[in-house]
Length: 204
Image 1 (cartoon, one colour):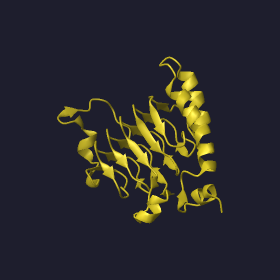
Image 2 (image 1 turned 45 degrees about the vertical axis):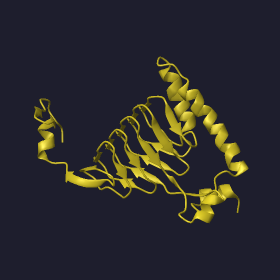
Image 3 (image 1 turned 120 degrees about the vertical axis):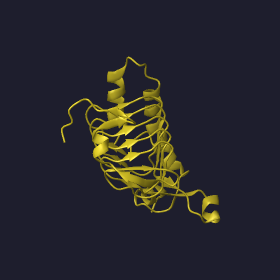
């Protein structure tokens, strides 16, 4: 079994294998092109993302710079995904993102890890665990999403969180490690920030 086959099978593998790095480099060239686009080149950005990503839906917008280990080749975005500056996708494994998801600046989504056994790390072994982010999720500034995590629909991850375990749907979660603070409730349908009232109609 080649190192790439071990990688694709979710096993320990040597990430600096020459054949892996040769393929990876081709994807990183496209990522470089995306990050060098001008603000007015929105159509070019969209076209590049469709070449780079495994899947990308309609009306997705990523603000450069974007960082991705594999240039997005293992990233699956739904529709209406927005990512602010400095999204980092450690996409050695698959990253699945639903519809209407928002990433604030400086978010990291990581699928790659290394064994605790020092002898294996010394030899360059790595493993990957897919990340799943549901629909209508908001990931706050500076949050870190760790390998193997699933985040449920409609959930808000507070700024600076380190998400090491699964987070359910319809909650506000925050902290290091990230924990559920409370469920999204009726008050959230009346106020959008502190004592500022929502003055527009909400269709539930």
